[in-house]
Image (cartoon, rainbow, N blue to C red; front, side):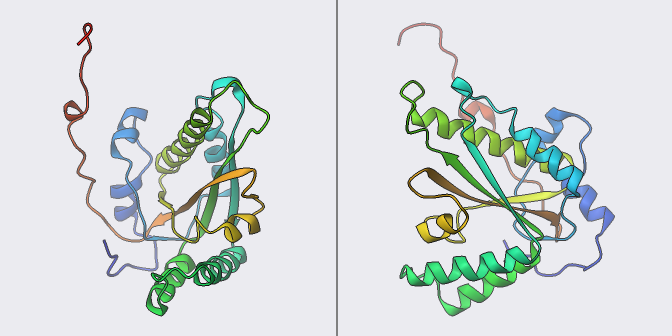
Length: 213
């Protein structure tokens, strides 16, 4: 989906339609959707604190707290773009054409806030399976996305920007030997109106078990 045009001044009608603070938590869960095209303003400092605190309520077997988040904003976003795109080109990824690089740089320049997401690998843990730690990190990240939506902003979980290039995560302070890197959350104000997401009926994915098959 391309964001063809938008005003540089926040449009209250667009913002309200797409990501307004919701009346009930259940409504928020059912109306959240991804917004790739974002602009300033980002959440205020006190709102960002609320968003990050929401991650701490994720289910977490063994209370290992495996989630790790790195906040990237201001001039650091340009530094991230230089670092990540150079690393991807060095990796030999044929998808990083000059056109693709230009597009990614322009997109990142418009996003006011990124949060890098990682799972801390508990090397000395023998009790909690690693997949449960990964699930806990995913649940914490989902809490971030829901909190962003509830506060009236938009977000997009990207596994581009060099997510799978070790040089990128190492530069973020997330040594590949100790962390599983899971991408970036781009956060800001929706830059253009998008229709509500078309969600499937839950009945397609749910069965009731009443005894052995």
